[in-house]
Amino acid sequence: MTLNKVVFCKKCVISNQRPRITFDKNGICSACSFSEYKNSVNWDKREKELKKLCDKFRSKNGGLDVIVPSSGGKDGSYVAYRLKKDYGMNPLTVTWSPQIQTDIGKENFENMINSGFDNIRGSPNGEINRRLARTTFEEFGDHYLPNIYGIMNFPVHIAIKYKIPLIFYGEDGEVEYGGSSERFDKPELDLEYTYKTKFTSFAPNYWKKFGFTDKELQFYQPPTINEVKKNKIHIHYFSYYENWKPERNFKIAKKFLNFKHLPTRSQGTFTNFAQIDEKTYDFHYYMQFIKFGFGRATSDVCHQIRDGLISRNEGIEMVKKYDGEFPKKHEKEFLMYLDIKKTQFNKIVDKFRNPTIWNKKNGKWDLRYQVSK
Image (cartoon, rainbow, N blue to C red; front, side, top):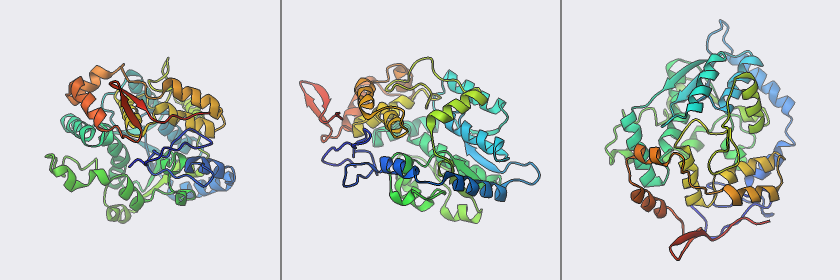
């Protein structure tokens, strides 16, 4: 839920409209506070913790001993590579198939596997996935929710099925991008917190009114906490053990796993190496812009400011130039995938414009507030 007054962080360019983000008395967002906090972390000590964890779960016969969710993108590939090369683990990469995969996404997925990784790929029923995407777009203004749930939950189902007790996700978004300070020192995914804050929109009873059955939703929904505990599944974030740097992850994946980037920037931002495996993903960021007043460029700018790669003033220029750019490139495929016309699309989009953020004048929508220097 958006707030009635728009405030921008004084260090980065994020606003208080981002869900679950908080600001301190000095006007600094929780993500920037966490970035400062990381400077005081003893990373050598954290790595010793990681080595101890790997020693506990490492297979004694060379079998698979850790699951790394990855579609072949820079971050999942990086985590799998580091666990295998530097810590002697035997990762099983687990992939939830994109809605409409890009050519470069297919190439990077194959390159990851060919670099020496086993993989299980979950390809959901295409008809069900499209219906879910259409429904979540109409209900929540985000067609990508089904994939988010699949990406998060399918690896846990696989861990239980194949009795692989350790899962490593990349970064903990609740602290890296703005969330509770209570998570600053937590290496493991908090199931109760996650189920309460992230999976509420996929409560089983909610979807029955749209005609979906429990069986159809089984891999979208998380296993119960009791199931996870019974099977002694431990879910950790690699970003707890190592200072998370997306640009470094990209360079390592490019050098050692033959990861390819786009020849030009992604729509809505200035980068060309993140979330490039999915043709419809740009609409997820576009709807983020519609609902909360900040888009993909803001997200990229924020972590680059926190990592010291650009200044806040440079970031503001990037936001003004690219944020909210309409993803024209794959528009026809997106509309066909959801089976909606452009007029229907526009009505749904406008339904999610919060009046705190948007003002319509002479038939044109404008942001009421924009970040400034």
